[in-house]
Image (cartoon, rainbow, N blue to C red; front, side):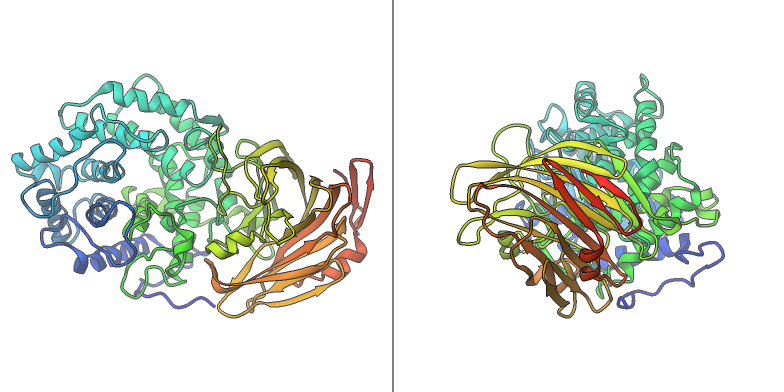
Length: 627
């Protein structure tokens, strides 16, 4: 069982919310606790919140601004959602922080907005916060303070941002300037909105900049900011807002499939320490009146996600959001993540802007897709299969499309993008030594010293129904030679069948690892001829079963302090004997389940035949696949 929450919450309401028990009052209590917990870490004039934890590469002052800006976003939703009927000290703190932060002689002044500076990210949160709380904060600021705020924001005008979701920070910040009658550049706004058109791939999916950068930024950035821009303009402005609403609606149609029965989002991509922010796009769909989701599903998804983290000790005993997934876990973060970085979680509270009488707060919760039936969802644009099983509530993401690499030039791999599979119950092994080994969720060509090849640029080939395929470049360790591995994944029941067509140096050994499972104690492990299994004390089991081509040993790779889900982790893997030609087909059954898994029985009851380049798999129920 997860630990008890570190905060007092209102009584649950199992009539209105039969699945989570949460109501609007729970969200308000959670917001109030987080905002109050920040006060001891404020600078004297409340312009910065200097939280404990590892600093980012931007430095302590920028990190302090981040603490102000991202928590101001949460405060703004709380203030505006309550019509200003909140503890007046909350409004006073942020009004004072704006006054002090823009005073260059205060000793707490915010860094100026310069090209591609971290301040640009934080300015967007301040702009949105000011827009949403205008009657209670902006309109009551002294005129000289308003002028200083405008002067600070003016660093955006004509400025250069990074060519990704950062373009949208400029859009909303300059639109705020326009909303208060300050100088701004319409060309900057139009340029940013035009640029994201180059990244739109269809079906509600944007890549975050050039390349195949698909992750939660699609929801909490690429969709969110254009619709905030539309909210700030107050009109359609040439039809853009209509397009943005239609696209978010398309995205939301399948978005609930990313969430497990326990509320956990699939653990994939960067900036996962933002946690609750995964709920932001479903709230925005309701706010912009463009969601295809039932109001009760919107609340069930968002409340389930927040409750998932609260029940696992987030926020912590101090009321803070640590850098990590549950507790502090730095390998799940990036170098740009400072101690206040997790407070982009504030976006997950966007629903507080919806009035208490809105249907998302008053209608009864309805189940997530995985709570109703087994789910198989193909997402061709990112190249993903989503695979949810009702009996254990796990959702798995099979990755044949997102690699977070530029379109051209050198490619690298990243554990949050390069794995073949992610899930709502597991995380990739991300500590440096574990990433060097690269066992979990990976097929590797092994050098004689055991060094693995990497999954570099991914080239999608197919994604439809229950099948997806891709090829990737695998550089053989210690050489400049790159070889090709083509992989096809097919889903059947709770299992994934993975077919690898490998081209490698003659005599190379091939290794494949399944999901890494983790917990507070060492997972139990078993190995046999052609199979390996790891199981946590909570009954979460990962297994790999050899169906063809694996004639080496099966084994377990153990790690300590390498996984966001717990200090002890284990990954089952298979190996091949050195192949004389370097060309071969390897077929694996990959299992992740909270049921009992019997690898020996699976190996004996599933038949696999290879005829030329075609693989035929037959299951005990008579289902046959030709891959």
